[in-house]
Length: 102
Image (cartoon, rainbow, N blue to C red):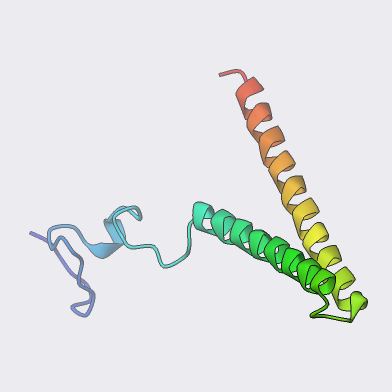
């Protein structure tokens, strides 16, 4: 017999109160670590593609402002360097975890 202190709270399994259910069974509203990493990768990729398009437009004569092209290339370069730095930190953390003795 399940005792519910608040009748407004409903759990998926009526035999188990919502407060005692596993958080893994409840839907997560926050994006996962994988989603965040993929989102960051896509942003860096988009910036790289935009920088490449700006270079091609400058070479084709469609764009005359070289400062804009240089700014986009620099932004894409900084994003890529940050991505590589994060990757290196993750690899180092993984290696450190693997060296731990159980």
